[in-house]
Image (cartoon, rainbow, N blue to C red; front, side, top):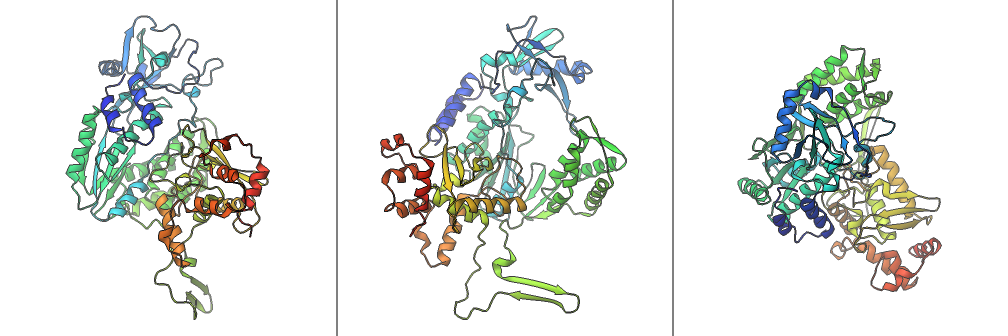
Length: 599
């Protein structure tokens, strides 16, 4: 089903902590992956090919032959190879700037058909959602290692097509060309599920590189890999190790896209310079955006598709031009005025004002931004206040005069609302540190998301998708009741979410529940360091506390106040099996949580 050396992959993953993940990946490589189509016994239906294919038959012939020669496609068949099947349209996609042509299978066709649904419409969007790596993740690692950090980059060849489709689903991926039938046997571009299925292989490679070969930091965006390491380490050794891993697994890498070791590299379309400690937009991308803006300023209206393309360029540029995010909100709102991509939108005066601002700024900007500190220190944290008046000028006030208390040697680290809410929830929910934080990368399939918290009249429900005592990932609901005190978990969560919405936009329900001051998912290191810094400020020995201290403290607090079996239920301990059979009503859990704060 796949050219990947599955036996070697199994050997490399033998110490991986998630055995279910490993088994899923290995079985998929051996027997093909379930492409997550909800209905397999679809009636036979043939779609017509796209105009891009009909107008360029020579390119279709050439590209189709290449797919067959590489083993990605089976055919030609003079008659249908299956009793029932789905033929989706084929087309030619040409790179907008590279000019490279690629064969595509339009699995979103037919569109709005009365009887037949498209393959992609039968694949759940939520199940296939992914959290992609961001340029900030790379910058954060570079800041950790310091100036002259060493970078390497590589890329898989024909990424999705290294993984096979399960045989009982081949009939869903058919195409027809010149009266002959063909079908894909490997994951194909255009399928809604291909990215999330393939991402499992990339995640496994990153784990192998870190745990088995000692590569300190490796990031991936589907088939793109970036390694980041200290300036005093050997970058050539890392590149050799990456090449060795791919060769052992029999996964081809692109020589054209393999770069390093170096201190300057283009990653996710942005140039990272670890010598100057800055990020830059490539000149050709700035010129491309400027030309796009100029074309808009000469039009009275544009299609929704064109406007979304421009917004894509602006969102890309805003990774470096942070203030530019303020000048896309109106354009985003404008794009929602019509439903269909081919519908036209009139460019208003306000829209043109924003476009002119972008154009003028891009002309005068040096295309550079520095690596800023990700933890924001507020004026109130260092007791700095200023004011101004038209008659008296201005004044400033720095710190208060404290006669009795000794001056602090260092300024305390800010205590963000997310940290406060996380502490309260960890205590009342008997949570392990790993249940509310992430180690490195956020994964919506197992980490806490916005959608995992729901509010009722008297309580909130926190849904844990995975936990130590839930090996089959069935999920568990934790009830957090109001207690009308300063440490009420429900009020803390509501206050935190209000602050978060005002400071960070919540893109979707699969966004992290708890975030740091920079908007990224709350990490274990950040959380524990803040706990210990506060403990040190109030005079406690921080070395006596760790990530499990909230869980341990909660159990200790209620030990003399409620029955043992309630403690085990609250903390989800399974040391005695009889607790599984005790039905505990919500009112009892509420009383147990009230005991946590009683004298």
